[in-house]
Image (cartoon, rainbow, N blue to C red; front, side, top):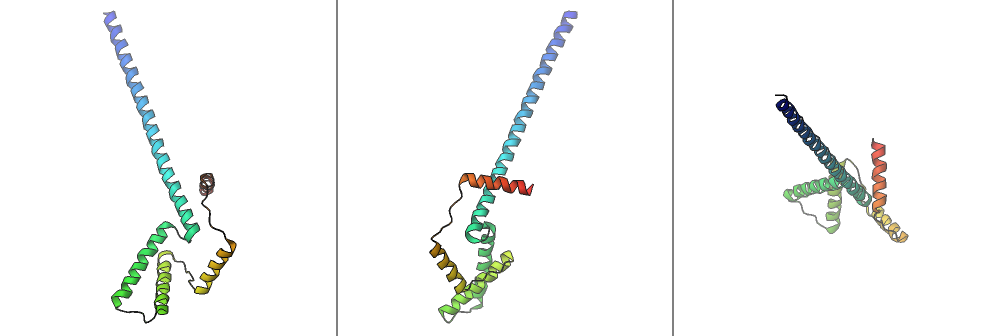
Length: 154
């Protein structure tokens, strides 16, 4: 009888060891998958931030703001078209489009933008005189800026 009891205890202890190993491995795998998912979401956030930074450097607005401005501008232009109003001259049409764009920007972002010809021409000539263009940041610079941003926000 003692032999059978010992064999049963050995078998049950082996089964227990195997089941705990499986649970530990499963837990390790679950932890690995969770960490992998976290890394993916962090990478997506980084890419989104970098896209917004690039968009802001080019236009002064984030991609979401630009999309919202486009929608607002379409709404304003549709309202103008539905009213049946037509401009009498090209200058009047341009003035209407500038006003529509300013209104769309204000409604979308709350910012007021001056779109006067003199300001735009001065900006264009200063850019031409400097012969400078915005260079795309290297990957190293982007990662450094993202890390700096993360440290400042935490």
